[in-house]
Length: 211
Image (cartoon, rainbow, N blue to C red; front, side, top):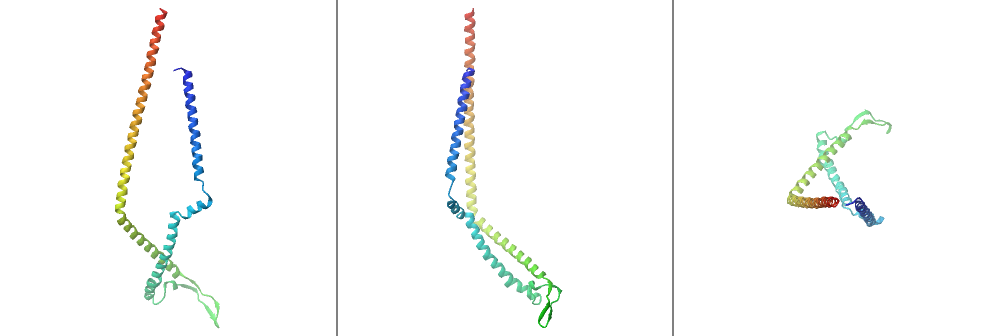
């Protein structure tokens, strides 16, 4: 194979690569055009997504849950604490820095106090809410695991089988590619061997003609 033939082959390969790149860019532009949607269609898709609906449900449930926790604190826990503190509610606990001064039913000096009872009430509310959420989530997770145990096992088995099938296909494809490469190399070696034999034969003929 001469140098000119190699140049022609290289040129054809480059032209084929350029055509392939052009086709790929054209395909990408077509896909981008298909993905373009109008504003209202995009908005409709957004508001109907599962995440938005889940968020709305979560807000409603959290509001109801907050009412339950507030009822637990105000109607059950606070009365018990008030009973053991001689009828003084937690949110009424305070440290007075300046007493209120009233003259002729007119407040001349307002009371100044550190309302640490309200702060303790907020801390108590926080811990009760955190504990309630933890217990609820724990119960829900246990229930989900119990209900979905069979489905999870089935899904894991399907995923394992799918992975094994993909690995087998990959191994088969690799073996086929290796075999094709080996066959191509054998053809190439045979071609070059024939070229060498022809070259030797031509040299012998040339030498014989010189004689």
